[in-house]
Length: 261
Image 1 (tube, rainbow, N blue to C red):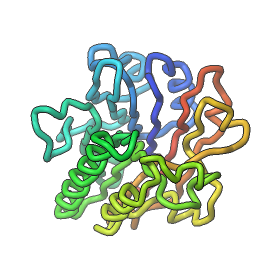
Image 2: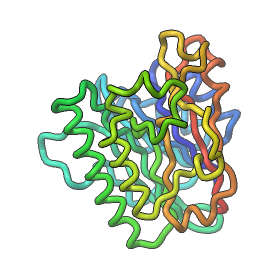
Image 3: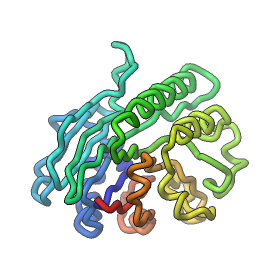
């Protein structure tokens, strides 16, 4: 089973590149972030025509996540537990997917950016990541393959940035942000790409201000695997070429894993 994540930075603006990549890469499950549309405006028909079931947790103009799956999805959960009525950000979507050899629980994650820091947005980022940690811990009790994937808006280490010093004051690279991600991993989750590619120089995001041309990138899109999923890990990769394949690309590129499911 090939499972992928991609922050498309507006599905309306990136529909053609998304369809082209899906037809080429043929993932079984895809998590999309920053779809930037309400549920009714999501182009489900176009993905269904390619054989995918769609689950959407959208929001007008901002945020929004979706799951696409060749297999039926069950137990679809559109919110991260632990929030209150004031938190209306569409940042989390979870579902159970059936594969040929079993089932896998997947989640599309769009963690808060947190800038400017310090301030309320950074506080919200850390609180949201703590909510994710609590939920990720609870999920482990099911002892099932789990993939928590998406745009975490965290640069884990200096290996994950071409110019680490340039991010020293950014919310994505603060010690608190990095520690919040480590606390999730320390529960027993594996950073799938880093497990197979321990060297630096691999990035998933380049801004629109010349960073792509200079390869001044960062790695902030991650797939975290439960122990049961990590045992099934066969391959992982970053589809870097997608950034250069469109006149109006997303500032992120797809990241994927292959699991023996």
